[in-house]
Length: 249
Image 1 (spheres, rainbow, N blue to C red):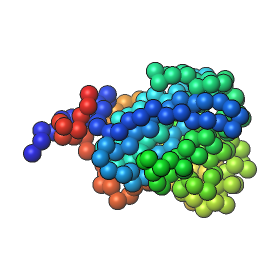
Image 2: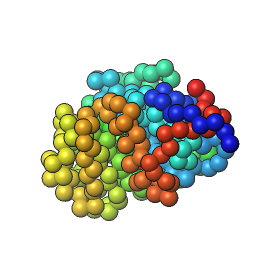
Image 3: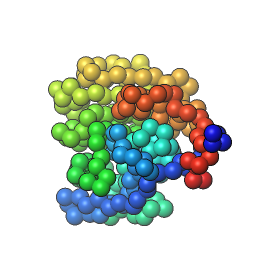
Image 4: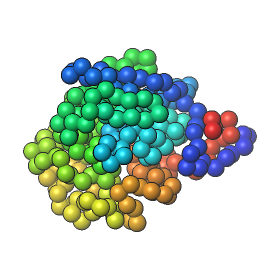
């Protein structure tokens, strides 16, 4: 049996990782990365929307980066990350400039379109996973026929409006809200009240967590809840150790 090694905060597990580019309807090129299982097709796909760029959000915001490091190997999930317009990361800089939550509609559409029409590999069961500002983008612009549902991390409900919640209520699609107990913007009790506008929404309060999900304990909780939503057949909690031959770094 292969030696088991602890999965730490910066552990990278084996996957097929490739740089991608997204083209928006208003003529911009966005940079990103797609991570898929190394030797089998994905069972589901996460299309991630990162936190507010003006407050440091980018495709490498740590929960999404760790999702791409772990979930292809541990849960057979594909993870698509990209920089919204005007945002930079080590992968590069996306064209354009911050659109205040309006022009980003084109970015969301480009990511959904890429995932829907990808053939090599095919990306099945596509879910939007937004974090903070990304949750508002998902609520406002993500109700595409090809999207199975939403997972919202630290939703502030700052840009999205009641009419956007109504669209998701009418859709009947699952909406999973992970709300930190100590969030700076929206805490569990208020989240339950506001997301009551979407009858099928489920609010999960996370004791002790804060808006940025700092701490490996909270990251593991987030990743477990994501897997439970999109791939309930996968056993959770996810392993805290992995065979040494799965570890890249």
